[in-house]
Length: 295
Length: 295
Ligand SMILES: Nc1ncnc2c1ncn2[C@@H]1O[C@H](COP(=O)(O)OP(=O)(O)O)[C@@H](O)[C@H]1O
Ligand SMILES: Nc1ncnc2c1ncn2[C@@H]1O[C@H](COP(=O)(O)OP(=O)(O)O)[C@@H](O)[C@H]1O
Ligand SMILES: [Zn+2]
Ligand SMILES: [Zn+2]
Image 1 (tube, rainbow over the protein chains, first blue to last red):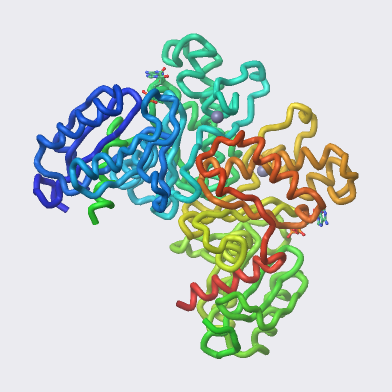
Image 2 (tube, chains in turn purple, brown; image 1 turned 90 degrees about the vertical axis):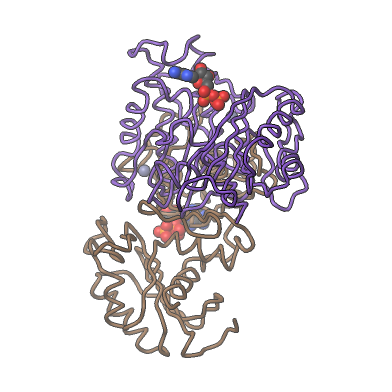
């Protein structure tokens, strides 16, 4: 399809994050035509500001919302499209989908931020031409979206990839991890706040020969191997703030090979990469959610 | 569809295992109409015997083969439908699909034994009405098939669920595991031969208060949790010889809950069960592979 503003195909997108909301209009081929960022404050203020921005754009045909979680994705639930119980003050039970459906009077597509980013990368970035892929963000938390046979994995809730347990390195048994639920699950060991809690700095601020680099890379590599072994996907895409540390992706790539010991039947086709869309994976995915909702 | 012998809908199925081949005819609703078992000897002898059995049955419209691995599943590969490099003497490079296509002159469906068992359970057993499920066999090896959005996960090769790494229990750091590739991957810790190598007996022959029960259950529970967390599937079905140990399923169910710490968004829908089809999951799945190939 050709890109270009056309009242019929113009789509809206919201990437709803804990610190900012990214608002955009664009088309299903991933073209972003206008974009605006607002700070996440109270739900009332933030939602009103977002609605007013869309009201000043050419009319959109549908809106896709990629939201921080936890969210309700069960289509049959009366709380579909809501943020559920979140520690973020005021946001529990916020009916994002309902609000924008009423205020903008358009069909709404809704998913988690990471599912949307996975979809964006799959259709317009690192996943083009593949059949299975995972997108993992390593940031304030660790979350992921899984695509199998070309479709987002949906079933019981949504994946919570940050909360499975990598094996601890034998040289690393003291830190208890900082996940309030699991202690040293993947998120409790390798998220930005876990790294900060443990070593007092971000990975980027620790010298390249500091053990933190190998340890964090090793835990993320195990997650990649586990996904390859359990799901036979072709690619893991690793995004988020922590992945900006120089050398981290390369360390993970090399450690993933070591963990797998050259065994998996699909090993020649299995790769670990950075997002091709950079920080635009989520908002691009939100456009695709809008496209799905429109059709 | 109605069950009953009908030349048009009669399907053939082979479950090709390392010790025996199960041969059957039946229909796509999972009804098995005739069944015969032969010992796995040389490829020549085994394949001829299988062909002769089918030659003496009413004519089948298609044949589904569920094979021990490793196998080639890539549709575009000239080795599609072959067993690839196997330690099993004589069987490397065996063209199972080609042989039966030529000899029986029917379309062939082909997949791994565990993918077929997953399909059988999904459509006619423990997975009915679900959207995502994993089937894991815990026997001589540990292998699994994954179903997401109602379809078998295919991509780079096929899943090798036995070869990811559960976290070792703090009380259990001495045994090195018996996987020739990875040492203490899941298969190296919890398969029948691993249990035998370590404690000299099967789980069933060890007293119920022996540590082996909790350790093995704990490792399998971690695999269940990892699959729930990474894939948002609703159910893990655990089959194979080791699962016949009394109390094991119950221990795994309880340990899976502990590992998850009541966190996953889909937890209320996520269950661990035994195969509803018992030992017929694989052969039923092979019938479904035949059905897919026929249509
Ligand atoms: N360049 C960097 N190097 C290492 N860590 C970083 C870098 N930038 C951000 N981080 C870490 O990433 C986390 C924020 O991740 P990010 O993906 O930007 O946000 P969020 O997960 O909240 O959407 C913080 O914990 C921060 O310490
Ligand atoms: N009742 C049982 N209790 C415990 N272990 C068993 C039992 N039956 C078989 N096993 C173990 O299961 C393994 C065989 O698994 P099985 O699924 O029957 O075969 P395969 O994996 O070769 O298809 C053996 O290692 C055996 O020790
Ligand atoms: Zn956790
Ligand atoms: Zn292994």
